[in-house]
Structures are given as structure tokens and as C-alpha cells.
Amino acid sequence: MKTICVTSMALSLCAAPAVLGVSPEEFMSTLQRAMAPVVDEAEGVIHSIVADSNQFVLRKADDQFLTLMVNDKTAYSLDGERSTREAVLKIGHNAKVTYEEGTATRVDAFTK
Image (cartoon, rainbow, N blue to C red; front, side):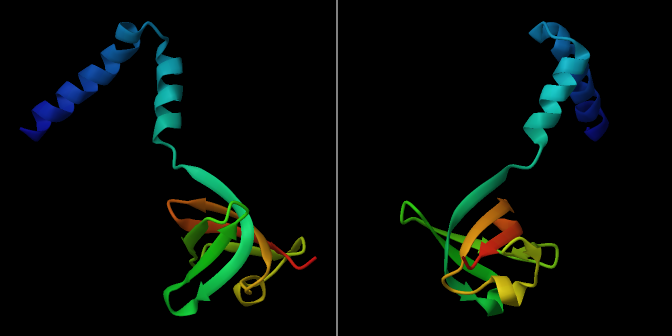
């Protein structure tokens, strides 16, 4: 059964460009963009930090709150210089955060 499903799916993908009237390259490019992770950015003030659960809350300019996770891959900078999690995640710091699916990939904080 799995072989039939995979074969049917492969045939559908092979026929899709012709059905849609686009080149195979254009179709694959569109498909890759659609499957790429969604990367977002937010700016605001660090409102709170939940160290035990690797989370912090950012208060955006529109007064909405955004809770984000951090992990070992999150990169940090403070006033334009590479920094540490402990130095960057401080209540009151202005921050610009790049994140994917609720996890910060980069946190740039500013004290000035």
C-alpha cells in the first residue's frame, strides 16, 4: 500500500508543472519556498524571563506580548557586540528578535 501511495504522489508531482502551466524549475522553486520554515521578527522590550523553562516575554510596541523560547542555538548580541544569554535577557532591554515557530534564533538587545 505504501508503495502505491508514494508512486501516486511522485506521479502527481511530476505532472503538476504541466497541469499548472509552469516549468518544472519554477514549480520546484515555488514548492521549496512553500516548505521553508517561516522566519519572523519582532521588536520590543523584554518584559519577563522564565529561566527555568528557557522562555522570555517580549512586549511589542502595540502592547501585545510575545512569549518566545530560547535554546543552545540561539545567538545573542548586546549593543551590536556578540554576547551571552545572561547579559542579553534582562528585563527592560530593548530587543529585536528573529524567531522560527516560537523559538528565537537571534536576540539583539540594546541598552541605549
